Image (cartoon, rainbow over all chains, first blue to last red; front, side, top):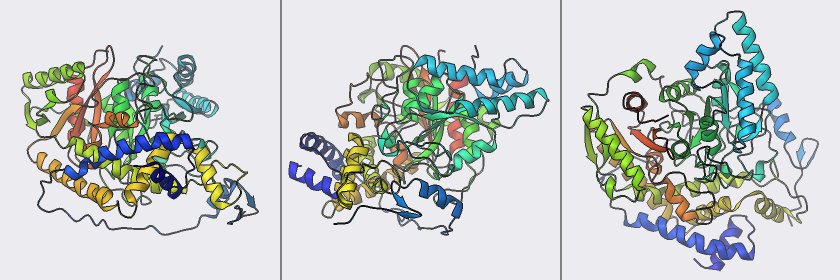
Amino acid sequence: MKAEEVKKLSDLSRIKVSKQEIGEFTKQLSDILSYVNKVQEYKFVAKEYESNDEIVKLREDIVNPKESEEIIKQFSDRSGKLLKVKKIL
Amino acid sequence: MIKDFTIKSIHESLEKKEFSCVDLVKQCFSNIKKDKLNDFITLFEKQSLEQAGAVDKKISKGEKLKEFEGIPVAIKDNILIKGEKTTSASKMLENYVATYDAWVIEKLREKGAIFLGKTNLDEFAMGASNETSYFGPVLNPHDKTRVPGGSSGGSAVAVAAQHCVFALGSDTGGSIRQPAAFCGVVGFKPSYGRVSRNGLIALSSSLDQIGPLTNSVEDAALVFNSILEQDHDDMTNIKSNEIDILKLKNSIKDKVIGFPKDYYELSIDQEIKDSFKNALQKLKEAGIKTKEVDLSFMDGALAVYYIIQPAEASTNLARYDGIRYGFNKKEAKNLLDSYLTNRDSGFGKEVKRRIMIGTYVLSEGYRDAYYNTAKKVQADIKFRFQEIFKDIDAIILPTTPSTAFKLNEKFNDPLTMYLADIFTVAVNIAGLPAISLPMSKKPLPIGLQVIGDFMDEENVFNIAYNLEQNFRFTNN
């Protein structure tokens, strides 16, 4: 892994990294990725597998107004019940 | 001084009025403050003492206590308690107040448990040493220059140092069992899906499970029983019955116990090898059948783990942008800049590393080679365990390859730190139940792990109980 790739990754991950961190992470991430690359050498024993398609179930989306109040209290910036964010551009 | 910190013994003493519940709770808080092990992030001193006072009144009236009434309990700070700070040991959630109780908290509350406070952990449960916490490292009570293990390091220390009777932790790759082994206590991870994750701050949703850290196998079984009621808000939660506590005491003479055939060749500390060999010998002498099993795929499981877990962590932690809740550095220029600066200042290095690894293994062009391959290997590892459990009732092996290491020893070398999980992660990859119990406690504790087949907790507890009781591995 190269320094430019780490920079690209940090942008994709929405994480700012300093120049010093890029150096550190380049070495560390390379080590970790070369270790986990062991999965390519894994020797499979099973002929077939149980289906991996787990059934995705969703619970009903019920609004709890009392809980909403509590959640709104955690907003870092707000106007009444509305969440304020920085301008997009 | 109160000595035996187990649920039954504490209850008996309270009911016989050998000490009051207020005295018990006061002793816990005074030990916490005196020992300075940094195992708690938040303490609920006032509420706990009020609750203890109410328990004493009940006892004086001769009323029967509920299952955990009067029992001081510690909760890992990634499990939500309504109205209290839940930080996950991150600056990102330093001031976050939980808006609801986790399912397991509701269950313990119903049974009267006294929550003493929230315990320290590795930031977002990412670590094996409790050194990545924003609130500083936790110290091992057996040797303060050593780590307690992680990520449930605070919970393990709280139990080991008699700061509480039992604690809850969470285990994604060994985060209950490894610190339990390092601190000389019992730590249990249930089968995946057997305990609701509702209200647990997610690290890796397909691997995370909540479980107890206790001073005895019986206590671990009692706490497990009390939290496994089905929760319809966690769609992966499986309906299951409580285990029969009386059956823990059954003889294990008819059981077959597997052990890794090449364990003496594995890179493990010599003292752990010796301790394990001794345990095996004792089993054989007691006439219990043992059988060699092939666990050579364990390093494959570790590689799978460090792909799937960061992949899920990177998606789970995408929600922390400091806007709806969490750390917010107000001076950002625009929306993108606020994401970047909040996440830069709010997350520690290990969290950043894992988010980046996760982003990498899920990205277009690398997903097949890493994430998709890891999922296939995971299915094969599940199959291997199913085959192994056709002939045996449980597997035993050391919980960790080393005893508690020194503070800072592995902190700057993440890959070496990851290798500390080598004996515990395969269990999570296959969704199995496993317990760690102390084999010996001196000079440093050594843990023995008992792994069972999926949903076969009863066997795990039965075997672990017999190991603990009849073989006297512990040298208290």
